[in-house]
Image (cartoon, rainbow, N blue to C red; front, side, top):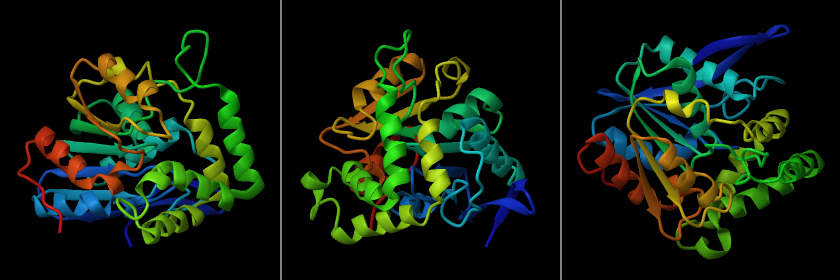
Length: 283
């Protein structure tokens, strides 16, 4: 399996697992919390069929990547992305992030620039800034995130069940857009992640991305459901779009947070129109 080494902790390397398939213009898919690259299957398949080179990777702490005790902040996570982009010498790349993965996209463009990137897609984004502060009254109280971390410490597996319910808007979508098997599959993927990484990633959600936004000089597509119960639409995507002069917002009516799984056709259509791809079909 392909890995890149992005650091070292004590006697062992910190390796990031990736998959690199197809040919053509590269698209890097960056998954959400607390999952891994396997959760992209409903988008990666049509992208491959449309003639793109599709690269997925597992964030440190998750999937087949190493599970270090440190590095779950966006400066480090974006450095991991930069190491992948550099190793594969990717050019004219389309970066696609979902949920927590949109943080890597935003920080990468803010810190490393667009030399290797032509466009970016943010699905259910984290930006601009989730934490309520004196200069960010639209944010969320820090106590909510502290509660998430306490729940993870007390019973991470019970927390994952509640998270998956919010991720899919389970009561509304079970048996239609989400099967019980898909729910269990996502739960299982999350359960295999690092306990320390799962806990520490919550703190990364409070990153202030506002300084990164003026540095983003590529076209951006934002896609989000207006019933997102993980990252509220009014506090994230709807608020973010006016802050990016070259951004388009596509709102999916009634859609939850987990749109790469629940609304793959709508996501694929919006993405295809944005990147100029031919229509992407689903088997």
